[in-house]
Image 1 (tube, one colour):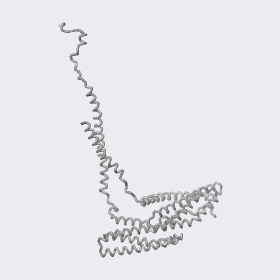
Image 2 (tube, chains in turn brown, red):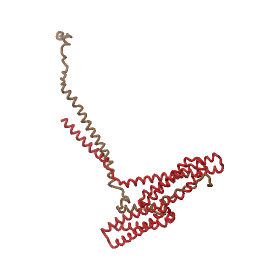
Image 3 (cartoon, one colour):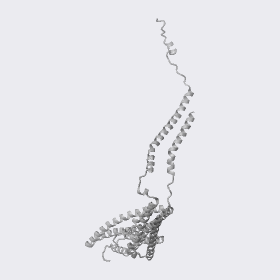
Image 4 (cartoon, chains in turn yellow, green):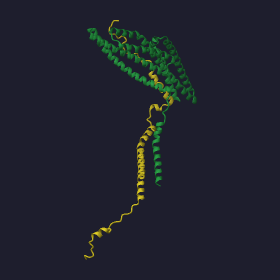
Amino acid sequence: MEENYNQNQTQFSVEEPIFEVPQPEIDPLATKEKKKTKPIVFIVIGVVVLLITIIILAALNKPEEVVEELTVETPTPTLVQELSPIGKKLQVAIDKLEKANPTTEQHPFPPIDMELRIDDAK
Amino acid sequence: MKKNLITITILLGSFLLGNLFIPLVLAQEIPEPVKNEEVVARERLESEIAGLKEVYRGQLSEYRDADKEFVIAKDQYHQLGTLASINDATEAARKVFALRDQVLISYFELLRANIISSEGIELSLKEIVVKRIETEGRWMVDHKQRVIKMLDRTQFNSLADEVTEKEDDFKEVALQAMAILSMGELQDVYDRLVLVRKDIYDLEAKSSTADKTRASKETDRLISSVKINLDEVWVELGEDIVDGNVSSFSSNSLKTLDPIYSGLNKTVSFLQELLREQ
């Protein structure tokens, strides 16, 4: 029993380990390729992210434009808009005529004392 | 394969970016409708007039306050006769005199701007009155400068007398300005109504009936009578302005201008009726 068991430590250290998993051989060319491809992938992902961001921003901005268009398409009806071009011209003349009423003095001489004096007698 | 993928991505990105930002860039580049130089100048003048009105009102309010202070200082000086009261009265006089001058300067500036912007005044009359306004304005500016520099009480009295002597000139020029402005406004309304009449005339040409023809003739007759009235008054006013005396015109202005105003009002009614019938 004892003969089967070799206790020589020198021999043991020289021998290869029985259960060691063999390491796969690393190809230096393949590593280089991997290193090259990584930045390109990042650029593509970056561009895609940028595009998505832009699309989202564009989508967020769109409703305002729609509101503007709607306000243009459905204007609030007013008296001026109902008038024809001739009617509008006439209305301008009427407004101006109201201002031109001769009973209202528009530019009266300023209410200032033109005879101000420190001493009363001349 | 990877190169193709990158190229497609870049192209797609450029397309989307272009679609998003080109409209914005274009919107900025689209020029605004070009305004007529005359329209721009008128708009500038109207905004100048609005500003002048504000300034004028403010100065008038300041003048009123200064006038009250001057009356108090003057009473003190007459009652006490001390050196301190003379000094107070002189300083109060300087303030109120300068403000009065400034109020007049602003008033003349306002009249001038209104005349220039008015559309119904004949150019030759505009030039005459604007020149007179500018002359009075320059006189006021010079007077104000002397008021600011003046130290002696007796000299203040002499400066006060100068303004009193010029009062009639100022009022005459102001009356001339007011007269042409009033007439100009009526003339402007008349010119606008004539244009409306022409537009209605074009519509009438398409469909004419006996009733419409009768109504049109009545309207044209009224417009002609207003025109005759306007021309007569312009001739009368023009002569008075050249003579430099519109006091007679101004005292009768209501009587003179009212028939034109009534005629224009009636014309408006007729044109409204004609327009409804179209």
